[in-house]
Amino acid sequence: MMQLTGTLVQVLPLQRGTGKNGEWKKQDIIVETQAQYPKKVCISIWGDKINEGLLQVGKALTISFDVESREYNGRWYTDVKAWKVEPAGGSGNGSGSQFTDNNPSDTYTDLNDGADDLPF
Image (cartoon, rainbow, N blue to C red; front, top):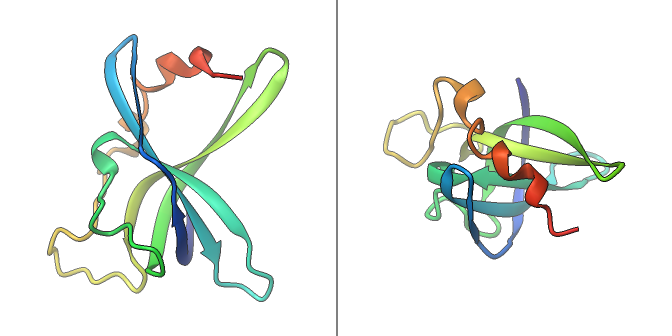
């Protein structure tokens, strides 16, 4: 499992579409790491993992994610896909302010079928 803690600096427009397995939605966010040399990372949140109440610019988040690369027309593209987002420090109070998937290997299986529909 990979994880980072950072400050949410931008919420990009929600993307929606239809693929082989029906409708999908994706929210990309930009998080700046809390390190000596901060880095900005674009992270994708898919489907029911999107929690708009948690995605507020300036909020510190801890994000658990998977990294996946795929080839399209001879070029490689890398996605950072969140499977758990929670406030930094992890409230752990079960208030519904975080989301998780107890089986992250199933999180994106039916979304990757549209991977060949890249606009570039």
